[in-house]
Length: 64
Image 1 (cartoon, helix red, strand yellow):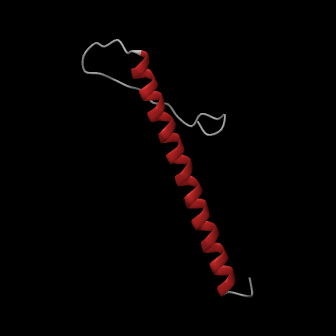
Image 2 (cartoon, rainbow, N blue to C red; image 1 turned 30 degrees about the vertical axis):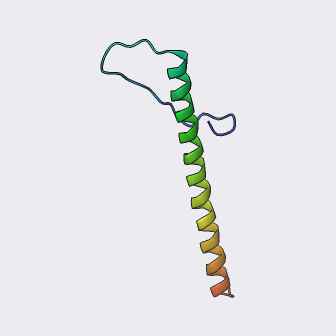
């Protein structure tokens, strides 16, 4: 989730029949949250790089 918005879903599968414990569920939930944070950080980094490129282009071309 990013803020209050879900950005995807994560599923956990096992090769054998398995009853997940609360610790298992908490672990997978933590992985999902970390994944969401990484996705958002990647988006922000990409946006920052695009902004820097735009500013650099504007600086090199005063007529813009």
